[in-house]
Image (cartoon, rainbow, N blue to C red; front, side, top):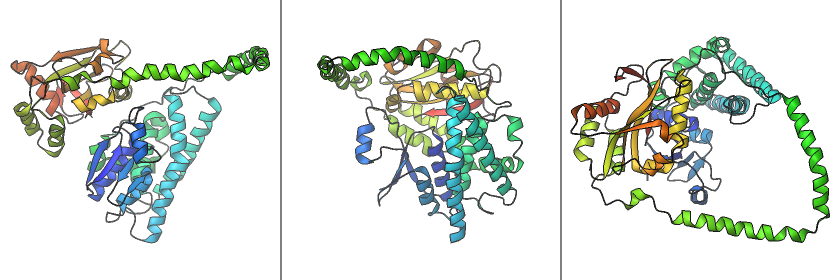
Amino acid sequence: MSIKLHSPSGQGRTHKILVAAKLANLQLEFVDTQLNEKNFQVFQNKFPFGKVPVLETQEGNLFESNAILRYIARHSQGLYGKTLYQQGLVDQWLDVTTNELETDVVAAAIQVLGHIPVIPDQIKTSFAQINYTLAVVNTQLGKSKYISGDSLTVADIALAQVVTFAFTLLFGETERNKYQHLLKWLNEVTSLPEWRAEFGRPRFPKTAFVVNEVAPQEKDKKEKKEKKQEQPKQKEQQEQPKQKEQPKQKEQPKQEEEDDAPKKKEANPLDLLPPSTFNIDDYKRIFFAEKDIQKNIETLFATIDLNGWSLWLVRYNKSENEGKQLILTNNLMKGFINQRLDQNFRKYAFAIHGVYGDEPNLQLRGAWLWRGTEVPKEWKDHVAYDYHEFIKVDVNNAAQKQLFVDYWVKQEEDVSEVEGLKARSLMYFR
């Protein structure tokens, strides 16, 4: 049995584990696990806490990303330190990263990104804690090459992942430059081939994102008025007999069950297509195992069944205000592909999608392979479907075929060019 990592692709904790595995020369089978309402119960039955990442080994299962890092490090020559004291230092800085930095970085980031309303006092406290911790880390890195001594450990990998996230979303160039020792160390860690293979090259904004604060006084006044208006109603409801509310509580679950029942029986139209000789899972394995990208495309054209599968060029028609900054355009792409597109579609598709061009006129586009010969329901249900252009590739049309090949094989960020546009940030949909 191979060691399997169950975790969602695109998540920082996933990729720090994969970086550590590469450094330790430990072979892992990565299982892209996107938890949702349909598969959560099955996953929880196998892994009681229902959390990812999970490492499935012959001896049993491990969860919590830092515990998995330690397990991997013990399979290496030094990633966990060479003495008991050094191992203690690694544990110390792993805990510092989680407890003194990551918690506040996430708390601030979800407000900056607009996932929750900005809470001024909370975000101010988070930034104060982040800066304090970074100052301590910066001082330590002025004394040693790596965070726990003179050699690279998993503590560096975990810390670099969180610092990169913070520097990408929370800090501008002026704020980052306060931490010169940290920046020198971060550049060394993020330049490792193993790091670049998972995270790519880090890109930091010139200026920090503006935090749009909500005036708390106005909000408080409105809430107080609403509470006063609700108080008489609550008293009336308390005086009313409870019997009036009981039927509603009983009827509601039945209605939900009836609504849910047809959905469970629905089959994906792609599963109803005639059998095909082309196996997408086999091709994905070949794609990532074969280092020669040109051979990958030759294998694709030699094995694909164009009666059951099709090749596409997909382009996003951006609005006037989009495509100005690389970091925002990159987030837009990941949101479209990793969040807005039905993740079950991964079973039926494979793609290389990316950000191309230069600021302030960046473009989102890519080459796709999927089941069937038409645009599938998964794309038609996408919130931005109407803003995408879908071009079905005719393999007998030399120009179209070559354009698909270019997107498929030219994968070196900041070097490769397709249609005269430089590839800036690329991702796989697999």
